[in-house]
Image 1 (cartoon, helix red, strand yellow):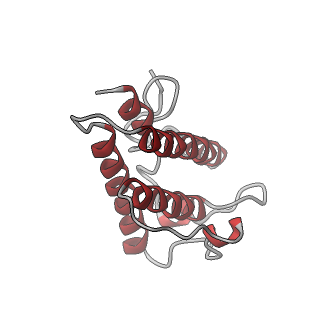
Image 2 (tube, helix red, strand yellow; image 1 turned 120 degrees about the vertical axis):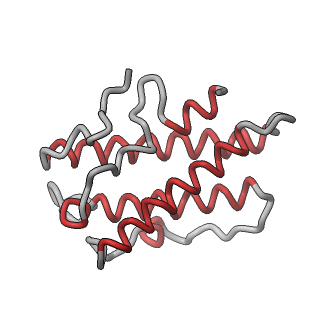
Image 3 (cartoon, helix red, strand yellow; image 1 turned 90 degrees about the vertical axis):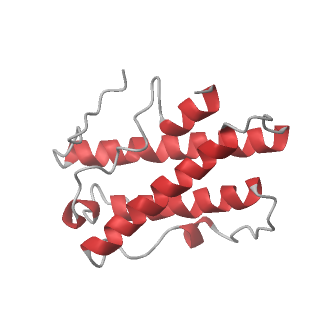
Amino acid sequence: MNHLTKGLYGENAHVNTLTIFDGLGIEQAGEVVLNQHSIWQILNHMIYWQEYILRLLKGEETVSPKHASETWPTEVKPPAKKDWELAVNKFTDGLNEAVRFAENEHGVSNGQMEHLLSLISHNSYHSGQVVIIRRFLNQWPPPTGGDTW
């Protein structure tokens, strides 16, 4: 496992990005704490940018949003449990796809490195937000554990 993969999965001083949503139901995911975004909104924002960066990694044409607000859903909570589960799976699948780029046996280009580092920092920032909200809701650590080491 290389350093990019460790960053994507949140090893070392970061929480594991594969487990930050574990054990949450739609009620907790839709809770607004301290007048900030809900976990549902954060998850969908993370998916938006993860998919955007994956398109860049694939060399596909992308159109940048005109304003950051376009990358945030207005819907505060998941409509149904199925929607929550689909979104978590979509995030996980996208993260695993980014790891496949990071672990390319031929290495990564400077441009790909830049995109992967951007995804690492973006996911790390918002993962921290999720942890803070979960702590406020007494929902941290998740059933799978929450220590970083």
